Each structure stands twice: as structure tokens, then as C-alpha cells.
Length: 395
Ligand SMILES: *Cc1c(COP(=O)(O)O)cnc(C)c1O
Image (cartoon, rainbow, N blue to C red; front, side):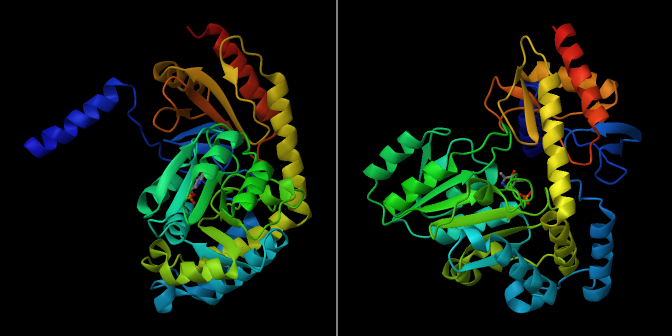
């Protein structure tokens, strides 16, 4: 029983710091109106930014994919699990990102978490390599850097000068700078043009995790590289496909040689069963929407929702993060206060998650509001009223 007692002590420590997390059970599809633990809530928590997770065309394509290819892939990609659907999706994604890379090729992986592990372990395989990692990077990039043999240096958030000094001082044979494009808990953008210029000057890779930009940023939804108008052979791009694309999985796009190295060497790609081909088939439908007129309409509506929320919120003590994206965090401070605010919203039928350390820095617990093109303008107004009222009455 000592073993269990030890585990329970860890759980007690979490609880004493208000860090216990609890899963809610959703009984309906991902959508603004969601039935959760038996009750309908208006949800502002998903990363389904374009409202494609339950889009009829995407759902129908998933069904069609299952009838064409079955339920599972049966094996890893290098054994026998690489289907026509995966191959078609990779071709589409390569063409999608081609304006921004040299000799672009794309590789589809089961999740963004695994894509990040795969990129960093493949590029940073030797001890002579050095990874320069942005301080607010997503956990999967931190874990990828840990798993790579390369050394790791963290640079302060958004600090191009500090990174420049680190690159200057480094003797590493291979230099890899890695950053989120849109910071997932803050919603702000990395200074990608300055970072890319720096990487080109130092012969470094720039690995961009565009989990929250793919499908949303750029006139055609191609993501952060389109938004900033970047093109470079130094870029390695990661787009995730479970957020704006509404389905699941992720892809890495880079020069064909980088992708070939990953096929040969990246363990998170090689040693796992290929994602069900039906997902890849559904993603083709999702890309049709994102790249077409409906995608443009959805992005425009989302941008209008972001503007209307920001215009409506008036806080005295809480802080609305300076974000122009669908991620609109309200920074509250203590874990308890953030939890109380989330609970009060839930009482009113509004579902907004409280985000606490270690996901964010201690003392910056927040409500992470995310908007989706599936929200109506009146729904966003309702949220704004509730937040304004709550801030006035909260202790
Ligand atoms: C969600 C996320 C990931 C992980 O992607 P999954 O497909 O959900 O595994 C990676 N990076 C960032 C910045 C993310 O927000």
C-alpha cells in the first residue's frame, strides 16, 4: 500500500494548490451548444475555430472514408498502413504550403504532439545540434526538445535580440529555432519575420508550430506563413488538423529531404500505427472548405466575433490579453479566483475553461475564451455581458 499512498500524496498536493483537473463528459458533438454532463452549455473552449468538427460535409466524408478504407489502418506507415487517402492528403498539404517552402513535401502524423516530437528528434538527433526554444512553447515542443539528443537553450518570450545573442554565441553545427506561431494560452503571434531573418543569417532552421494558425490565418487560411508572407528553405512547418481543420492528426511540411529523413528516422512517425485512413479522407473535405469561399466567409465571421468581444469587454482588475486571434484569454491571477469565475459562468450555462499552472505561469491563471466561426454574434454578446458582470461582483 506504500505505493498507492505515495501516489495519493501527489494527488493531495495538487488538490491543496487548486490544481486538480476534472474531465467533463460531452454527450454531443463539438459545437457552441454542447450537452455536457447532461446539461446544455454555451461553450467557448474548443479549438474548432472554423466550426468544422461537426460540419455535415466533413462528417459525411468521414463516413465515406470508412466505407472506402475501413475503420483502421492496421499497421504503421512503413509496414502496410499507408493508404491512398494518406498519400492524397499529403499531396494536397504539400501543394497547400508550397508557396512558402522550397521543394515542399508533407508528412501526415497521428497527432500534433507526435509531429513535434518527430521534427525535433529528427533534426536534433546529434549532440552537436542545439535547439533554441521560445519560453512559451507548447508542451509537445518542450518534450520534443527533451527527447532530442541536441542541447536546449530557452529564449525569453518574443525576445528576438536575446535569441540573436544566443545564436551568435553558439558553436553548434546545427542550430534549430523552434516556436509556436500563435501562443496557445495567450493568443499573440511570434515575430516570425524577424525570427526567420535571424535564422537565415545564422544558417539555422526555423521550426514553426502553427497549431492555432493553420486554417485561420492568412487570406486563404494557409496559416502563419501566408499571414506574414514568408518563404524560405530554412522553414519547417507543423500544422495540426484537429483544431481549425476539425478532424485530427497533424502534418509536417518542409523541403523534401527533411521529410525523407523523417520517414527514415523519426521514431514518433515510424513506430506507431497509421491514423485511420478515413480521417485523411475527411481532411480532404475539410481542406476543400478551408480553401474555398465558405472558408473565407467563416474566417471573416470569426474575425468579426473577435472584434465584437474585445469591444464589449470592460475590466477593472482582470486583464484581457492583447490578442487578435480566436484565443482571447482573460487573465485573473490566482488559481482559486480563476476556478471560481469558471464555476460562476458555468452556473449561467457558459462553459469557459480555467487554465492554471503548469500550463501557464504561476499567478497568471486565466479564463481561456476561444471563439469559433460557429458562434453567433448574440452568443458572444451574452458571454461579454456575463464576464463584465462577473468581474464587478467577484471578490
Ligand atoms: C494542440 C497543440 C499541439 C498538439 O496538437 P494535437 O494534434 O492536439 O496533438 C501542438 N502545438 C500546439 C501549439 C498546440 O496548441
